[in-house]
Amino acid sequence: MKKQIFKIISILLLSAFLLTIIGCSSKDENGDDSGEAVTPQAYLADCTVNGRDFFFVDYAAKTEWKAPLTKLLSNILVPYGEHGEILGYEATIDSNAPTIPQCYRCGLLDVTMDGVPELLVHPFGYFGSSGTATYFVYNIYSGQKLGEIDSGNSQSLCFYYDTENERLDLIGQYWLRGGWPWRGRYITKFYYDEAIMECYCIEYLHTEHDIDGEKTDIVDEDPNDMFYTATWVETYPNTKYYVYSSEVYLDDYYAEYDKFVRNYIRIPETELILFDWDEVSDEEDSYAVKGEKMAEALITSTQEFILPR
Image (cartoon, rainbow, N blue to C red; front, top):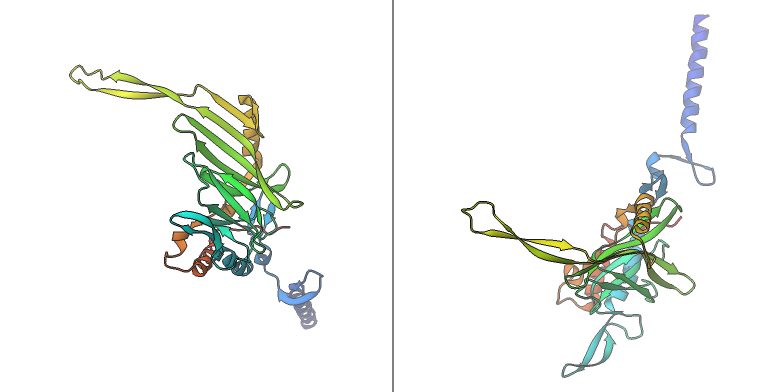
């Protein structure tokens, strides 16, 4: 009798084990058995913000951008003329293909938010002593110019997650100077209008500060020390605060600024990375080689691009 009970228990345990093995087989998106084990890592997001999962474009997809990027980056408009006089501009590779202007540096940024970034170039001459910098935006496949983006000192162009509206926003931060006695600080939002295929930026938060001051002489209290220390006392006689380009009172500005800090979560992996030409190529390289080297640098940088949902 005991042997029969033991045999029955053994059969039940074996059946349970077999059912466990069968239950561990994976299913595809349609619910069909694939026969392969599902690992939790297969569904792990690259980034989770406020409970929402985001996935980044993988390297295999980035390699598909290299050929069109190389073609566009190699075809630069350069001036030609006589005796220092510029008579016009000509393409370095193909006059019938899209071109970009001569530029200091290049980067990739997904302005259209479709998972494929646009090419940003900082053209010659588009900078100033204030620190301002302008970037031209190009579709990497068609070469079409999609607009311009303004930035400045200590710039950061990065994606943020708006927890209040549950959406991604492309936001820039920078500051400008007006000589010694003026500073402006900016937080901007970038948008893309698909109907006209053009991107643009608007000022979200903006402050202006006039700077003044006077030199105050402080005499050392030691009677045997005949030296004194000059101290500069800085003042701000005029300050202005703006929300969406409208001047507001200080409390209104900080109410909106506090809302920004509270609701917007920065995704640092997506911050724009720029490369100067001399960082990635040599002066003696041909335009074709320079373009290929810049394209390689851009797609292998640590900057990430978010897949659309």
